[in-house]
Each structure stands twice: as C-alpha cells, then as structure tokens.
Length: 565
Image (tube, rainbow, N blue to C red; front, side, top):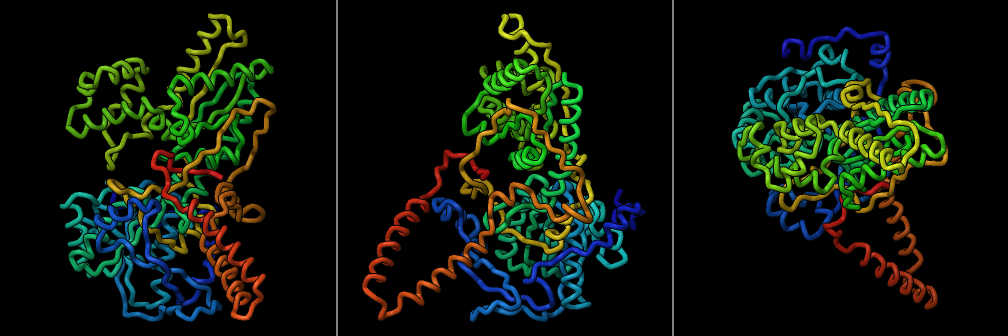
C-alpha cells in the first residue's frame, strides 16, 4: 500500500476543477510578514484543575496566547515575525480521515515556501509508524499538485494513531532529532492532539528543539473551545450526511410505512447529529449529552421513541426518521457501566470469548438481556485510546429491535391499534469522511489553525459547556428539509455550519469589542468629570463586578460537557 502513497492521482473533471480553487486566507495571515500580540497565559477551563494540569505539564502549561493581528491594526506592543533562517518541518496524519486534511499540508507548504525557498516540508508516510521508522516524503509542487482540495488522507496515509508509550515517544524524538526538524505537525482529533501535548512536554524536557503543533482535523467537531470554533472536516461531513438524511426523509414520507434509524459517525459527542438535525429536520434526534444529563435508561429511551411512534400513528403517520449519534451507547448509564467493566477486562488481557463469564452479576444480567449481535460487538477489542469501538456497535439496530418488541407488546396489551411497526437502519460513516472538502473546510485547513491541546486523564480539561437543549419529536407536521449536496461554486458555497453561526463564538472579536468599551470609559472618566458621572460609573461597575464573580465560579463537575445554543 505504501507504494501508492504520494503518487500522482488520476483526477476526474470535478476533482480537477476543485484543484483549481485557491483557498482564502484571513487578512492576518496574508503576505510574508505576520504581526502578533501576546496575551494572557493559558489555563484550564475549571480553575480547580489548573494546578494538576500544571504539574503534569510543567514545561508547556501557561504559555502566552498569541493573537494574530491584521496588517493595519495599531498595537504598540505588537511583534513582527519576519524572515528567519531556513527551517525543516515534518507533518503526519494521526487520526481518522477527515475532509480538508490535505489542505493543512498545502497551506503549510505554501507558507513555508513564501518565507524561504530553502524551507523543507517532510511528510511521514504511514502516519505515526512512518514517524517512528523515519519514513519520509518531501512535499514539493509536483508531489502535491493532484491533492489540492481533495478528500482522503492518501497522500501520506495513516496507521496506528498513537504516540503514547515510552518507546513510541522516544522513537518520535529520535526521528525529530536525526532529521533536525524545527517543527512537527500532527493532524488529527482529540486523541492525537492529546498525544501531541504530551510529546511537546517531553521534547522541552529533553531540550529537543522540535516544536509540536496540533491541528484539529476531525469530522466529530468535538475538539473546540473559545479559540477554536470548529474542527476541519466537520462542515463537509455534516453537509454530506445531511444530504443523505434528507434523501432518507423523502423516502420515508413517500413510502409512508417505515421508521428510519440513522446512526451518524462522530465519536463520543453529538455535534454531527445535532448539526445534521438542524440541516435536515428529522422527526427526532437523540443527543447523548441530553441522555447523560437526564440519566435516561435504555428502556426509558425506548419508551419515549414508542410514545412518539404511537402519537404519530394517531395522526395517521406510520413513518419517521430518527438520528442517533455514534456515542449514544456510552451515554446510557447502565450501558456505560457495562462498557467500563468490559474495558477493564480488556485492560487485564482477558480474551474476548471469556469476558462474558467474568462480568459482575448485574452486568452479566444486562449483557444477557441484549441481542446477540450487540453482545458480540461490545466485547470487540478496544480502540487505540482504550475506549470501545463505537463505530462497530450497531446502536441503531439495538434501538430498532427494542422499539419493535415494545410496540408488539403494546399491540398485544391493546394499547396500540395502529399498523405493525417496521424499521430500516443505516450507519453513515465513511460515506462522508472521504468527500471532497467544502470551501469552508478548504479555507479553514489551508489557514492551518492550531489548537491548545485537550489534556486527558487526571486533571483533564473538559472542552464544552454544561447545558443541553432538549430534542423533542415533532408531532405537528412534516418539515423535512433538503439541503442538497455540497456547493463548490455559486450560491451556497460559503454556507457555514448552522451550529457555528448559532453559537456566536467570535471570542477574540468579543474581546476587542470589550476593549473598545473600556477605552471609551477611560476617555469619559478622566479627572475632572462630574460627580454624577463618576457615581453612575462606580454603581454600574460594582453591579457588573458582582454578576461576573457569580458567572466566573468554577463549573459544576457533575454537569455534562457540551452545550448547544
């Protein structure tokens, strides 16, 4: 397989057309000179975690935030990054495929060559294993020409997404030192960026000159905070999935006799399911965060779905579409506890076929209650981050199976007199992650937005906010939406994810607005202003201070980690 990596692609007409698209750069990154301003030190979202994280990352925690400035911004303490000696940088894919990954490499290459034609960008063939084995491919115009604005990760490929053991970290450091790399770019999701954070700490500790940069490229959309509004690939995947879902919705209303249970790839978080629900308007979306917050059991979820089916039947409707996030299974309290027991047995090297016999009595009873196909999938070997293989657990089929059984029971008991319940199940995963990236993801990836990594384990910093909006079944009318496919030209090309526009997360822009107001206050409240103005200002500022003190209190650790506005 490695022989095919980095080889020129045979492009279709559409792919050739897409390769001609030139991504846009924000003003602050245009040109060869970059102006930056250093801000406050980085910290954790929950102040209670700061000391623990600082102990785990003594050399890298607390570094200054960097604010890139537009060329015409007048800031007295801004620093200008100009020409530097030639540099050598390595880059690798270390995560699931996500649209836009190639453009991270393209943006890096163009930026480096704009600074100096002597700069060198090396791609590690085969992901982390290529890093350990020093297997490189120099990125050139000729090598990269057929990968611009293209989907997949097949320029370099990927293997085991892990840089965690002492042996792996030492091998990575040895490669960076032997190749005299000034920087190492790791393209991936939460797990990959977590490993990048630890790698950066180790490099500093051992005086390795290589700077580690994590780039948030994951379809899940779960690696974000106030500085990183979304991940590369999320927009494309949601648009592709939403088109597929809208097709299913129209099929459902046309046939009028099936309920479609659609599971969406997206990891533990429900961002993809929520965004697709906003774009396609299904009858119901079950958010894992909402289930965790409400502590809904498996049968409570089943009963809620059945209540919706029965209510729609009373209106003469025997069809519908339900969206299910990939991580829902772990959000159900009793299923989470069962999965944790299974993971612990895996960690103790218990063979898969012996796991059922070593479960605790309550877990064994739950395991026995589940359909055979779910039992088989639950004991599959863990992912590289020691979590369950969520993509291999057919949660949609489990729900459809239990809903059908409950509807049959209601029919026998005389509580349901409608037609027999029928379901069709789908899992939309790899159909979207290899898609041609949208303009949004092309631009975002090309600009190469880096991220302050998500730290896992003791003292981990949770990324997200603590309240979930409910997602009720719409019993009033059909309102299925048809967003269509990704638009590369003409109207709709610049459409952003709905959740991104709803959340209003221009954090740094809001900081600038606040600074403008503070500057106006300094102008008004100079010595010599009237006593009335001074008293009004003191009263107002005291009130603001009281409100902000309450709002700045530490987050309740019992609350869920994600919030959708």
